[in-house]
Amino acid sequence: MSRWWLAVFLSGSAFAQTGGQTARIDTGDTAFMLVAAALVMLMAPGLAIFYGGLVRASSVLNTMMMSFAAMGIAAVAWIAVGYSLAFGPGGNALIGGLSQAGLAGTLSGVTGTLPTPLFVIFQLLFAVITLAVVSGSVVERMRFPAFVLFGTIWVLVVYAPLAHWVWSTDGWLFKLGLLDFAGGTVVEVASGVSGLVAALVLGPRFGFPRYVSIPHNVPLVLLGTGLLWFGWLGFNAGSALAANGIAAISLLNTNAAAAAALLVWMLWETVRTGKPTAVGAATGAVVGLVAITPGCGFVTPGAALLIGAVASTVSYFLVANKHRLFPDDALDVFACHGVAGIVGTLLTGILATPLVNPLGNGLIAGNPHQVIVQMIGILGAAALAAGGTFLSLKIVGLVMPLRMTEKEEIGGVDLSSHQEEGYETESPLGAPVFIAGD
Image (cartoon, rainbow, N blue to C red; front, side, top):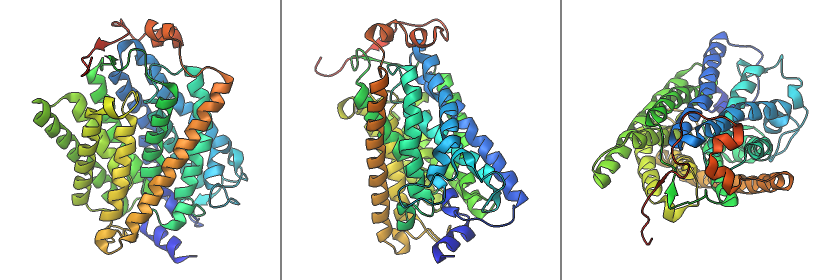
């Protein structure tokens, strides 16, 4: 047993960084992880409600359906072959082996102190929420069948290999020493960059940027944020894979970063526009949750407040200038997930401390090399996400059209995609806004 693996296992650190097996199942750890997995499952419906409130009324069902569909797409792909590609034995630094396709040989296994099937479902639910986040970049113009096929390919081409790189003991980023407790690279950087590439490939919504999709139901946005925040506690704390002190610190840090980011976002809105908004408060909270994800098990609560505040500031100004900086990333997935994930991953390399976790040896603890490792992890994740997403979309484009026709988009996305409506809709173009230079 290597010193590295032993340090990870004894610390109860990031979930896939616990690699390896023990012979005994711990019932306390198992009970804790059953609850954590259930909390993570709630995140996809929470995201559906959050996203649904942000779009126009004529698109609410289609937008929510993409997140719900991710629950089926990722689950089937993960059980069929995704888990084996990520964690199966017999692989190499880039990909796992295929011996556990269909979960062969896992049902009676033990991973750490947990039944292996519990580890499988916890990991599966991470794949679900990551794909659901990507959908926010392509809502209101991507054809639903195309999204289903794209999501299936994406889980296998992007998510599973990246999970192997970062959380499998065979992965090259794991061996390099990347600190990613719960998915700053695997979930956040991957979803943000993938969303940005998808938005570029699909092109903007009809009428963009003159016509924008104004949130049609702000209470839904707040409700979805609350569910995400609640589920994220299981997402991060459960990544300790044990009911231990690091899980408790992770939960505390997760809440702290979200709280700080929420307040900072409202502060910037007040300074720049005179009034804070409910959508802004919700967005800030989500940005804080994103940013603390890689470092929640490595930093102090004070550092978590700083991470949330810094990420909220960066994402706020990117969102405020998104029409000048980005393509039509409909729900700001890159600015709020990709960029906040990058900020959190870098700050983890600076603020990680062994006072919290024996592996937390960052810049302030005397290890400047960790910042370089974090940057390599970000670049590697971004490269795989960009290339894999582009390839996945091109494959789908060979089989079926990627986006709706102008008539379908203008006539109402819900009706054209599902032959049903959430409720009475407003003008399908949304509301016109003044853009400088018009």
